[in-house]
Image (cartoon, rainbow, N blue to C red; front, side):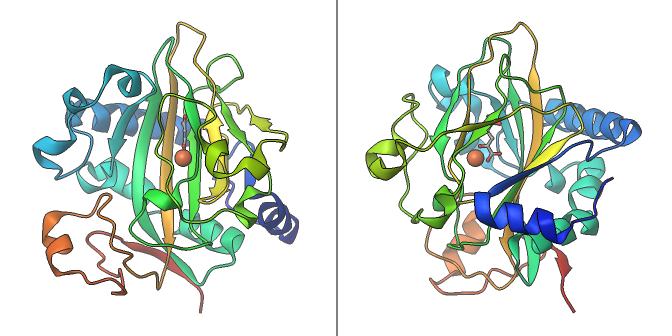
Length: 268
Ligand SMILES: O=C(O)CCC(=O)C(=O)O
Ligand SMILES: [Fe+2]
């Protein structure tokens, strides 16, 4: 794993809100990530969320979203191999350094498998969905297949993390809905982020991003993870928190339960 982070990479990330790391995984590591993701997703069946109950099955949502990607959340919670991969402290260190944070916890991981002929992923921000509000939240996206302009690689709007707010714009069917909330971003030139399998990107959870349609007969698999800066507090949103936590959490409470949000790495 290429886990070294230079000052130049930190500066690029801070300025643009994203960074690409080519050949993040070795060929052997990539094989292991693919094996674990495929196995964990198969084992999960049609349930999106670990410990999620009936409310988060694919059958609940409209077919448009089901064809954006197969989405399986918190695979680290119910697959030992995924737990090993996701709780790697080297990734926690990379995320912490890039984000200039004190430490990082897992918010949630996500396999995002865009199917053959899959729909585009509309422009969105990640943090407004989450149960904490932080300008230093960061997401990792690992390409498990070559990701290209043809099969739905990521696109970013550089610098948008600087002016984003925590207002939520749900991912709908319209690629451009985000620009109704942020009309000032409509002139920003997007940057495509094609990646060889095994490469990855990190993006600020407030940097606008999306993906094009998959115009090919093959899958575009990605394994992703969102990280929460250590010390973040509850903002009142449920997102992926289980009912027993929602019952007791008050707005402003520290989110520091290791069973739900494991600490990966902290400076000191
Ligand atoms: O893989 C995609 O199409 C979208 C990825 C994404 O939104 C994310 O990783 O935050
Ligand atoms: Fe996202």
